[in-house]
Length: 452
Ligand SMILES: [Zn+2]
Image 1 (tube, protein in one colour):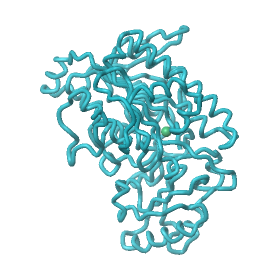
Image 2 (cartoon, helix red, strand yellow; image 1 turned 120 degrees about the vertical axis):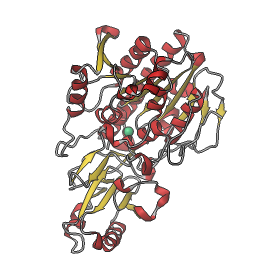
Image 3 (cartoon, protein in one colour; image 1 turned 180 degrees about the horizontal axis):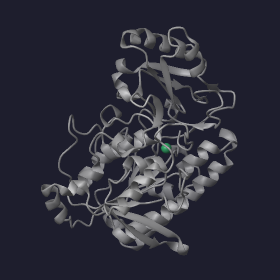
Image 4 (cartoon, helix red, strand yellow; image 1 turned 90 degrees about the vertical axis):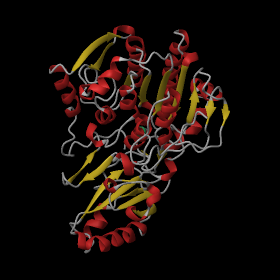
C-alpha cells in the first residue's frame, strides 16, 4: 500500500529516516539551504558536501570536472495514476504533454505493482531480483518481522543518480513520500527535505512538492530531477466513494494536473523546454474493491497443521507475499500447502511458487509464494480489519500505467509507439539521453532506452 504506515513494524518508526538526515546535517556532511517558495513557503534542501563517493580520488576528479551540457531531464511520477485518467478531461496539461510527445499506450508497471519497487526500477534500470526491492512490505528474516523497504541500504545496486553524480552531473530528488525519501536517501546531489514542513506524516501534498520542484530547479538547476507527486495515489487509497463515484479522486486528478502544468510552464518560461526531456509516468495504477471483497490469508494459514507457527505474511494491498519460516527440511511441503490454500481462496487470482516462476524476476526478499487478488478485491493481513481502504494496487489489474516522453529536445520523438514500455526503462532512457558510460554490473540494463 502507499499511504498507510505500519507503526508496529520494528525499525521503521516515522522520523527515523529524517533523524539520519539530521545527523548528517549536524556533522557537516550535508549543508542545508532554506529557500523561500511562492507565498512565503519555506523550503529546505540538503546538498552533499563530502559524499563518501567523493573520497575516492578518481571520483573526486570527475566531480571536479562538472558537465557543461545544457540538457536537462525531469522524471515526473504521478503516483497511482491510471492511463485512462489522462483522457478523462480532468488532466488537460498531461493530455497535451502526451499528445505532443512520444506516447506508449501499452506501458505497464512491473511486479510487484507497488510504489517502492517501481520507483527503484526506474532509477536502477534493473528488476527486483537484482535490486533487492520487490515490494513495499516484506518479511525481514533477520529482523523476524515484516517491515517497509524504506532504508537507503535496501537498494543493493547502483542507481542512475549515482552514475550521473560520478560522471559530473548534478542530480536532485523531490520525493513526496516518507518512505521514498528514506530509500533514496542521500543519493542525489540535492535533496528536498520535506521533514521540516510535514513532520511525522508520510506524504507531502502536491502543491508543496511542486513548490519544491520549482525551487530545486531555480536554486540548483540539476541535470536530472526525479519528482514524485503523491496526491492522486493518496486520494485513490482513501476515497471511500469507491470506483463508481470517485469524487475526491477526480478532484485530485485535476489539482495534480494543474501542478504539473505549473512545472511545465516554468520550463518554457525559463528557456529550458527546448533542451529538456520530460518523462511522465506512474509507478502503478489503482483498483477499487468492494467492502466485502477482502481476503485475509493469515488466519487460514496460521491454523493449518502444516503451516502453523511457520509462516509469515507481508501484505501489499493487491498482493500477499508468503514466507516459510520453519526448518529448511519442511519448506517444500510448506510451500505446496501455501499454494493449495491460497488457490482455494475466493478472490485469489493466482498463487506462484516464487523460486519456480523466474518470469516474475523477484528475489528471495519476496518470499516463497506470491499471491495476487482478482480485480475488485484486496488483501487485508494480518486480519480482516488491517486494510480498511478500498483503493489498492499490487495485483495484475493495476499494471497499466501512463508513460510518455515529452519536452522540446530534438531527441524526443513524436507520435505513438506500440512498444510495451515499463518502469525499468527509465534509467536506460536517461543514460541514453545523457550519454552515460557503463551499465549495471551482472547483466546490464533490464530495460531499454525509449528514445529510439
Ligand atoms: Zn505508488
